[in-house]
Length: 299
Image (cartoon, rainbow, N blue to C red; front, side, top):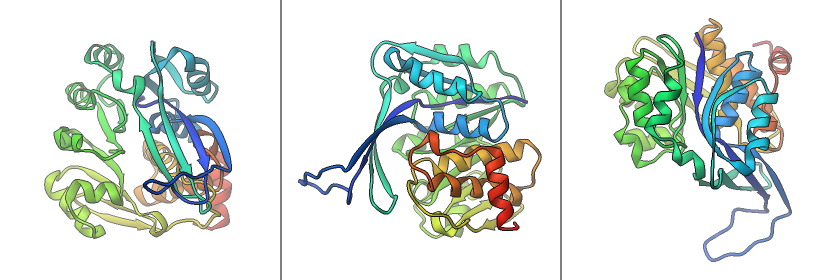
């Protein structure tokens, strides 16, 4: 079984601010950090640090080839399916406030130039029972889902950022959806945790749901069971890659045969470490670090 992450690749511009800018307001930033990001890139690195050898498929601008592709290569991610295009790579403008919270503006760039021909060319290298991981930051998501399903691949989907496009996707092809409360409400119209889970299961009875709840932990549901897991306490410096870290570690744990509850716990521990560090990809911890951290809590 192999895992393909068909995902975004970004350059992140992180501005540290006293508070998020308001309409009509001009504020100063205390510090600017230029680093790598994109939910796709972050999740590939998390998968690799959690002990897998993921393949990453995506598109970048020529100017960022060394930065983005080089980072994935150095972190043990296979980059054979990353194409270099003219124009700008995707990038994000991130405001990071004094409490470690963020707000993000995304520019799609080459992430929005994934066409059907490229999808077919990539997927012909994968087979039944392989896994494809998707987020909502690239083009051709619907087509990737259809073609992956035709091949019998298992689809994990992180529908972030949530948008009206989600209603067009063949969600019944998805094996596991990993989302937060905001995305859950946007997909279902429900705000209560159990109502979100119930609504998704009514629409997609065979789907597995991982619903992250911020400070309240994470919930899991499928047609047969539900599980809840609390958070690990850690200082919050930057929440930018917490969800991506959780996603990569959770999938890795499942692939390695760990049960659902322990997978939730281990992924939560990894996310707790990530929020204690500044940056996105650079904040994702190594497997051994997560083991040692979780051991302190005797979970």
